[in-house]
Length: 290
Image 1: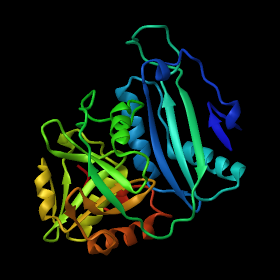
Image 2: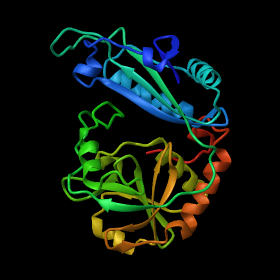
Image 3: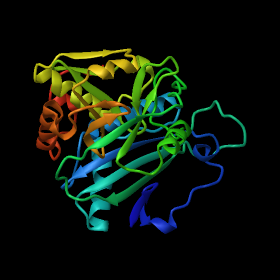
Image 4: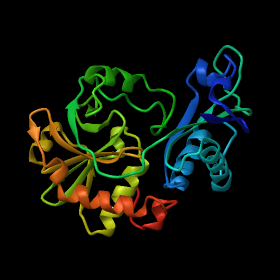
């Protein structure tokens, strides 16, 4: 496969960066995972907004616009002869001396990974499992999609390699938080519930899409600090992320749900597919974002 590194399209085996990159030394880096549907990078503007906001928070002198990103993605798609793809747009702080740096990073490394995905078709189903390790708190004012993933790795070790299981975090106080690689939703009496950003979760791009879609459909949305036992009353549970889309959950520990038979998750999935090869931003839907 060919990938992108600092302005060049190169074979992946030729991609190298310095061992003095502070993304490697201190975890100062961010990434976005973007799914491309038949050549279209879905909700790209929202990914860029989150990325640029995070770069500013990390004091990395870099920002990206749609035209630049689309040009790179299209080139990678053509060079690798694929139309449907997983894109990881990664920005690492760049080189520095040994020791913590307070000055702005002015020469970050931009690395774009790509791998082919099958054409989007059916909806998948998973089982949820509450993990014992609590979700760590954000290191700053809000959670960044950063290189700091050890909390997620520890949770993944608990559930193992089975791809049909999604681990679900609780906060240290016992509130429902998010999946290891996803945001969490559930339905009670036709109302849509999801943990608040105040729990320290990532404000996922697909999460934002679902909230806007739900408001447009007239579905009551409840965001808050919810204990685990609220899931005993749920009829549907599903998780979301930008690559796996909307994934119904059929069971979490001893609680059973509708899974693939869930009405609201199915409607959301159909709407998601309707827009996946055309929308650039959640704003095109209207609705809300927390």
